[in-house]
Image 1: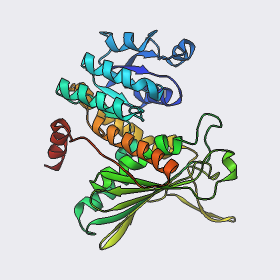
Image 2: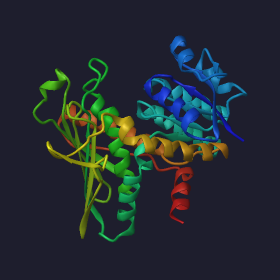
Image 3: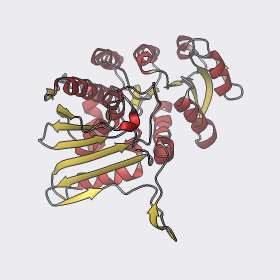
Length: 341
């Protein structure tokens, strides 16, 4: 039986997920949509899908089994809490929420409910290259991981819409999450350094160097550039006690012609991670059909939020900023134990 899904937010990522759910994957129907712009929601709605005037109406509808949240970040808290109160599995695009207080409310609601309902859209965990890299680290064949270098580069970002805070509270959350997942570690402190400013971004603060200090002593070096011009370039390399493992460049095809030997670079995130997005939804559909969630949890969303908050403090103060987490609830410890079996 197909899972009946409602989508909140029909901007670029919402439209892409609607396409994915209706044209690429099986086992799901998009039966409802809602957006702050009624016209945009109507234009994005699949045939026979209902356009709801409010998120609350969509979440509470008997037609909807599970929800995909692609709305504006500050709206996520209220929508996630409503989904949990309704007992409906929910996929939430990053950022899960925009403050530590909001993240703690989501965690408390889910723990009180007694079952995982929230999956956060950290799609890198579903990318085949990252999964192979994690398998190498987890095997122990190279010894303990000592350092991880993560490099996210964007060709450009929307002028006026992408602010100087967003490399640290929007872009960085992906690198924070994938680092925690790859290294099986928690981030306990953050430093930020600002190199020479790129003239391509105008007044935008770009690039950034961020150091994530992990509980084990490992350090993650994140180098963020969002106006690099040449394409969307994601890189990762882990240095261990007895060797180094790296992500391959994507796409992997190498072209040789009269202009030399070169490798194409993806234009944007959709091209680089299209298969990862597909896979994360395949796994979410199965879990949501069973009334629960898998993959990145509300705890992972909370951890990423703390890293972003600490990075913003660090860039303003120029100092090391410690991260203090609450004790992890048993609800999320149980999932780790099951994954290790």
